[in-house]
Image 1 (cartoon, rainbow, N blue to C red):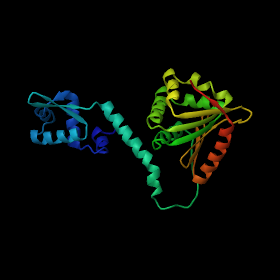
Image 2 (cartoon, helix red, strand yellow):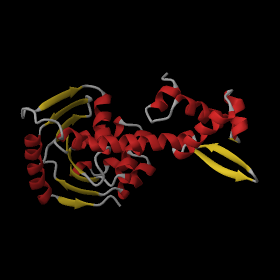
Image 3 (cartoon, helix red, strand yellow):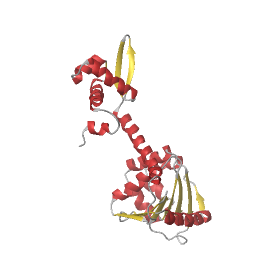
Image 4 (cartoon, rainbow, N blue to C red):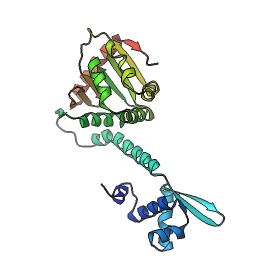
Length: 260
């Protein structure tokens, strides 16, 4: 297990500040003297570290008479804050990549045959810049298998991040797929579908006899085969733009569907 101090240093929390934070978690609410006694350091140094944690909003401060009392932010709140920071950083990656010197225009192809390949795609999608869009074409069998691939908790995290970041979805399904989400998702997760900024349209199975799913976001095109856990991603603007043009043509001819 990675030591707590090592993890927190990645978020600009020093080792001494971590000692103070952990001491406060154990003490609940305490004054500087009590904290200093707990971590076995002098009061002046302890006060300095406590104030730094207050500035970083990792510790809250309250006055009881003439005494200042301090309370550590709950670990779950900290985890959520760090998760948002990481997600925000990931959303900047495309812009940062664009600053690199232009490389030869050769597609980058990655192949994965494990569940982790799927999780990587979902993580990239839910880390897109706020207000971005991704598009999906998916057949019945692929959707049935996809919805069983993640746990209820994992789907909840994915849907919630998509909603929080206002990431738009345009989804093109085959007609046989429309009942799959209601059958395979929990009631809570199914209700989250209605909160997403999503347009869903469908065509007949004979019009689009697709067995897998294809997702396009940014300059990435991902082919996913849920039944075998196979994922192939192609990172290339021209190839992705060609798929998007095909998607637009099919989407314009498809019928609208509401999840309500």
